[in-house]
Length: 109
Image 1: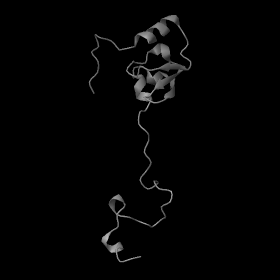
Image 2 (image 1 turned 60 degrees about the vertical axis):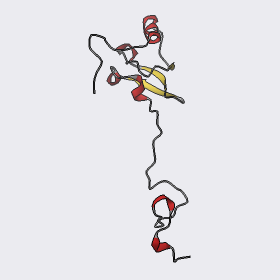
Image 3 (image 1 turned 45 degrees about the vertical axis):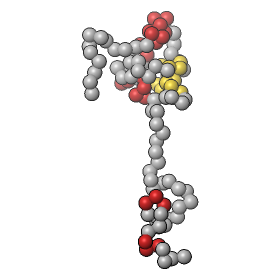
């Protein structure tokens, strides 16, 4: 994956730099800037990152330094396994694609 040029440095949004300079604690701070890099000054703090719908709580550790905030706030829901979908479906009961009956099922009532 292509990285940002070294001579440019890592991108950090202006309001995050202001919080860093003031040494304002980032405890439960809301962050909308998913594209900002995580700096070493943010270690051992808890932030809430916006994923487009809600804020996701994230604890910043040493292993996350250098990554972007957006990498830790998933924007898509996890999809359940296809076998677990449909609580009313009984075991052993099968249907064809898109819920249609198969040719062998037409004679049955």
